[in-house]
Image 1 (cartoon, rainbow, N blue to C red):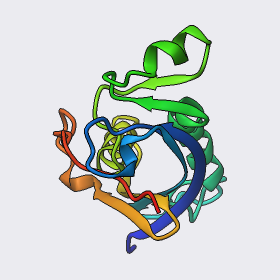
Image 2 (tube, rainbow, N blue to C red):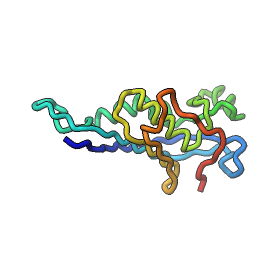
Image 3 (cartoon, rainbow, N blue to C red):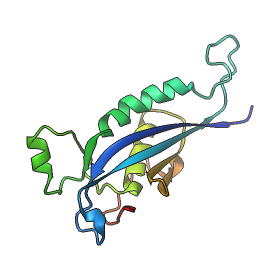
Length: 159
């Protein structure tokens, strides 16, 4: 049986700040991110099994990604750890996801891909839309087992 790709799309809202960026993304700002998670595999052929014909049930994808990533990132400040506003956010009880890397779309998509691979999902790719016209995509096969090498410089699309 041939392999099939399946995709589940998520959205989450988050803020970040790219310290030292040459453009307006050096300011504290937010995005409504759209995340496309593409899984690939052979559909299950166990006759009579509830998941017969599925690569993976969409509801299983949803619960796994929601619990492991979206709940952590949604309505959070995505922090590298060097942002001057970080102390204020913490002292006021604001939600912070301390990621310890520059929170560009490229790095975030690599992080998400690595986390999903660690969960054992048959991940093919992750595409993270930062704006309606700008995205970064990572192929799971290109993410090293020990994790991505995050880019330390770069920007975002603040249109």
